[in-house]
Image (cartoon, rainbow, N blue to C red; front, side, top):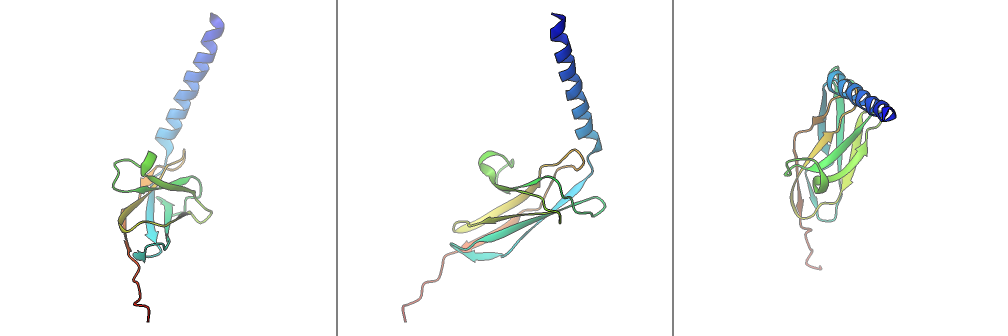
Length: 136
């Protein structure tokens, strides 16, 4: 029975240390989302770029950005349109082909032990029908 106590104690100690590290030392970040176009025609792609900086305005280069449907309450499950790894420049990009209509996109930095999570403002993009010529 005593052999069961030690793994449990190790597990509790690891959980406690991890909780302290993640919760207390993460620095604030800010995420800015831009798009390659405000309006595109159906079938065209839009490139969304998220730029992430820390409180000292230095690019954050580790971690991931989730690109989400901003109409959803949480950036989870079916609301996630895609994820991208941050680059050495502190940016992450996602190319989408969206359907006809208005689309609200948000970028969410998932956070690391060193950098806190942050969410961009909503980026609204419109997709229009292609114009069809009269054949002349």
